Image 1 (cartoon, one colour):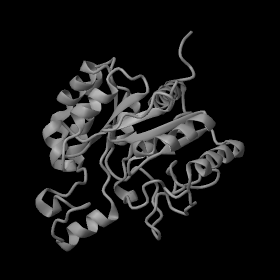
Image 2 (tube, rainbow, N blue to C red; image 1 turned 180 degrees about the vertical axis):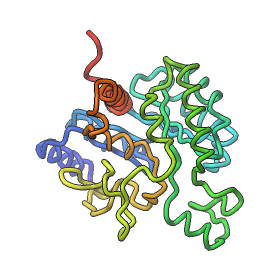
Image 3 (tube, rainbow, N blue to C red; image 1 turned 90 degrees about the horizontal axis):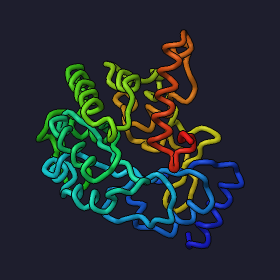
Image 4 (cartoon, rainbow, N blue to C red; image 1 turned 45 degrees about the vertical axis):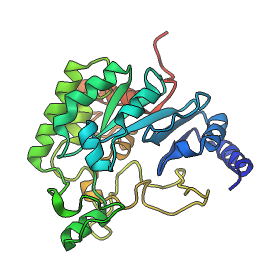
Amino acid sequence: MTETAWSAFFAGERERGVSMAYLVGAEPALYPERLKAASRNIRYGKIGTNGTIRIPDEVRFRIGVSVWGNETDDAVLRGGSVLRKAMRNYAGDPRAIMLFTLSPWNLQDMDEVVQASEDHDLKLTFSMFSPTKTYLEKLDQGAPADSSYFRLGPTRARPVFSDDDLKKTSESIRRAMQRFPDTVLFSEEYCDLITKPGPLYEMNPESGLAENCGSRIREPLRYFDASGTAKQVKCCTPDVDCTHCRLYSGGWSTLFRPTEKHLAGASSFEGWLRMIETVGRIFLFPYPFEAG
């Protein structure tokens, strides 16, 4: 679509009552005019970026800057390290939050990455690597490495969290929260949830899809591709295997309505409120409930 058409599109979404846009991959920063149009029309937004191109200041959305490890592991996992440039681009920017995607391959980078974020006056939060069905199928078939989405091929262990990996992840997150309380945006309750063994969601045995994931695309949620065409997909990352999914978007959005467990008593309800405040700070800019 033309830029004029994109402006009309976002204006139409505003009229539909949309209060938040989630703008992700491949690289939204390549199209700043579209981001400006979205920001002019929709109150809140979250942009996912690798951070190599700075998004104009007039785009008043939360900016999640992808991190895959320290500079060495970032280069291995992504084919080239962009971490230093991303941190320079967004140092001190209140819109930006570093999104460190944890995996069994990079837990040892935790302190270095969080310290670098603090040194650049950047908040940081965590997601967890969640393999796609295509990736797992290629591993099962013993497919050779390629130059696009299977660069490492079968050279590393299967990228699925074991129970021991989950325990290590929980311990690493908690240490980071304690050591860097002014930098890490997370909650102990959510750490417990996201690192528990087994699938996070109730799985449909026939379809293999998560039934109770808050990121499932159901009305009034709508998914549009880069051409502005509406698509019927299960979620915004449709190839991810629901059985192994621990992505932060799905995990957090599933908490928007408290469950019976959260409503069982004052303590559990307070824990749910802490999680909701945390997800607000991760996704909303400016955060609407700042004290004073």
